[in-house]
Image (cartoon, rainbow, N blue to C red; front, side, top):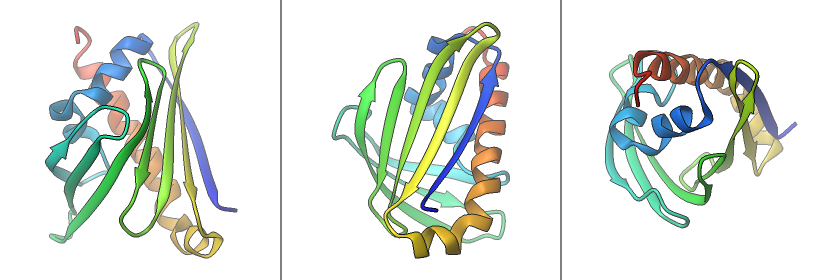
Length: 143
């Protein structure tokens, strides 16, 4: 297995969920697993744009990240190519539902060996990311 998939239904419109992704100040609040914070250096939210940031772990360590926005189809799709190690492609899709928005999150690694080695981290971290996104959207219902 090289791809980890999860989804979440958030009680908000697609536009409101997308707003929490495209706004760097809001994204910095929820991106990453529980307990992590972020410092964004570059955030070019356009097709081919660069996204460079450091995740600060609850363990006090810093984790630099280099990404490219490979594809943006507002307000329904964002594809992030993680170009620093470990290399992966994250596809976030937003679809309207009767209760709000279904967020589909698909993290595809180039290497099955890397995916296998990181599965125990990625699977819970992806769920925590969606927990944090849900909280941010709920906290800011007017945006």
